[in-house]
Image (cartoon, rainbow, N blue to C red; front, side, top):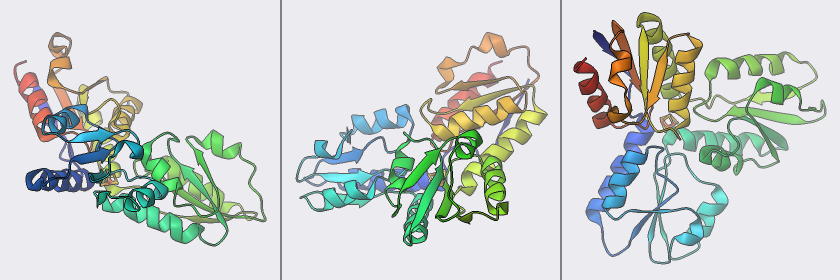
Length: 282
Ligand code: SF4
């Protein structure tokens, strides 16, 4: 049996930078306890490792005590929360991915002049909550073309169309083209989808076309990992999404001649390595 690993499997630039920043903070650990505002990335195994080093995860900004250091995760946080923390005796360390930061700033700039934000994303995702907080003049979050079509847009208003960085580029661009082609609408489209996501999705789809079975590794709560599994499923290739190697049911895979492996942008290399080792025993 042959195993093919996607070149793009594993940490993206934003996650890598955020974790290196947190590692430095842990190493320098002064008197201030370190809190992460929400999970720094969507991977339970990585979070467990930091918890063992004494890093705490705060569910809400009020849970960060005065005197502590608060780390903003790769997905970013709402600007009001950041401002409130900075107004207290809390040292804020910003580990927001530069691409998410760029999306926040683009939204702030382009909505500043009476434009409503239309954001393609998952309304309850932390990145989306952060992004919409930068919209100056109202926002609407939608997760499908149908939801966007059901919205009654007004010809007298200006709109800014953007997407959560990890959304599907092909779907977003199709929606953007349709809106731009409507002479009644005044819409500015922002390019906020991250290349790392696109490259992972394209490679996953390509790999799925070459192999008989796919394994996608990453947190179940990781949006970009779930979408990789979706891309593979759309290609019609049987697939399993696992967080760790011990979740693989190896007997079920023994009959496949080629297996492709990819992993979400928040999946550490040691988890990928463990899956490859497990598949190597087949
Ligand atoms: Fe940043 Fe892209 Fe990684 Fe998201 S997927 S953290 S936007 S590099």
